[in-house]
Length: 230
Ligand SMILES: [Zn+2]
Image (cartoon, rainbow, N blue to C red):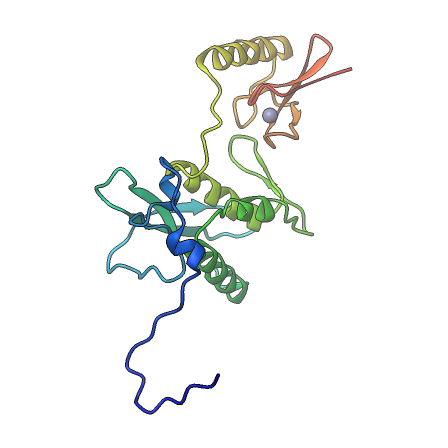
């Protein structure tokens, strides 16, 4: 049935799904509680945001890149307080590729503001390979491209704000790997390489660090403990 609108429209509201309005949230299901704010695209940017700036220096450019990720704090001061990434900026004296960098930062910021799980960004960016070849970072870690390193920065940030669980080794594992590292260094009789690992270490496929040595017939990573035998 058509409705003729005779007056000016001064206000409107999107009709809600009745199941949503009348559905009873299961007890303890905090995500369904109506007064908890989650990240979504209509969350307004406050005047002031807190963030972190990370420096990236690659052998491909003489100038460093500075990556700033700002966060928004939702439900501040409540039990549901959460910090979520809101926007990313990249600055550099190097203006090569600047249009792509600006495009990338705008798209990443838009993904952040949509809310939900943004961890897939890290995986997507990490798997970008530069046709000119990657490079090793200080510490012997391999970066296949600048984009991959930006993904790495985002991961570091998401860990810092608690969106990704830390993947830390326990004290016992750390002590064991440190002891093995000392043994391997003594055995090789060489000066340690960049990350403190034997200079002739191979690249580990798990943590992308040049820290894999042959120990008791097995290739063992002295950085993350990954081991391949036979
Ligand atoms: Zn490793």
